[in-house]
Image (cartoon, rainbow, N blue to C red; front, side, top):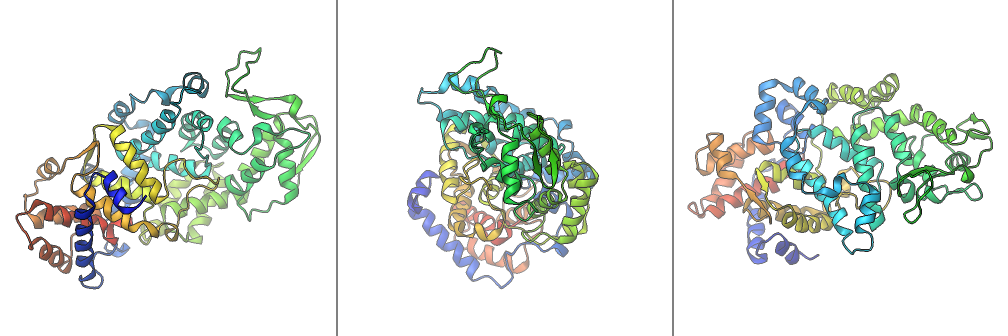
Length: 504
């Protein structure tokens, strides 16, 4: 998609947006060195830091809530999402009836109808709505984390049917539970078994795809100490782990597209995995023993801890915190909440340098900050999908099983698109959605004047007030046409496009 088409998708005029973008670039270019940069740890408000790391971005109501109860209470609250009411989000999701249907029901209704795309669009749209509106923000962040960790590409209609089950019944119930439970649920997931070819693995010719990714991506890590022989042995252990096919029903009444252990497909001989003997005759228990070995392995603890610290702290995870989180993982039998408590309680977390937002996170944080109300999710989701596709991060759209990367260097080539998102959002140009800025300002007793408005949003977006040089730069721009509301909207777009808001 070229830039003009992107702006059309957002409902903005290409010429106007180009002019705005050029003007805002000039403001940043002529600002004093050090202006509009991310807030460093020594100047950072702990409330905003906790919000920016645990959630998809601040809202005025959330900031007020955390200020009222304190940061520690907020972290404890977010670690117990089952106690947080989320009825407003549930009402938004209610029309997406496919989210509650099984893969078998979806296949019966949509396969061959030409409407299978609706299943995938519901799942992706629901992900965006959850991230924007849920009160269980940390939980949703962990759902995203594990969705990437156990990544499944939503590339065809069958994958769409299966991934609905995987999202609802595998990732979400276990996102803050025990890692072994999550790993086991994933190993039984028809979506995973189909995606990594284990559903067709037989004793005569074991398929090694799932076995390899199970160790490299799901547990031990590429340097976790396993060998090619281990890959082959693990593949043998999981022969017979398959699914009930879409066009065949079995006498036991089991539903199509659900997990099935087929004993006649299983290699029941003795195996050796990571030096441990798995006796012959174990049947399906062979795979369960492998999962037990992998879930409790020190390399798995280190690998999971490293990824969590990278997600919440820094692209280059501090080794001291990785070690602490890995120790908690092993001591707690892989309890994810316990690991997160260690992480959020560490000095390395509170002293962390700013971390660059990935495209999805940036887009969601803009919507949250401007108090956007998505009134027509279908009108909103179509251009949103297109824009995220252009930036390379549509949910469930990573073709390789490693999940979307979590380091800045992978995402710095879409800054122009981010600028255009900021411009469109500040000017109310998001299709199907309405920015509620005036009620937001009135609720926070902000005078409808340029300087207090911009200072209010700077505090929300950056976790600090504007410096004198930043204030001068923006107000000089506003002064070029002080009675023009669009110029003030341009200034708000600048706050969101500047480096200070590209990081959290």
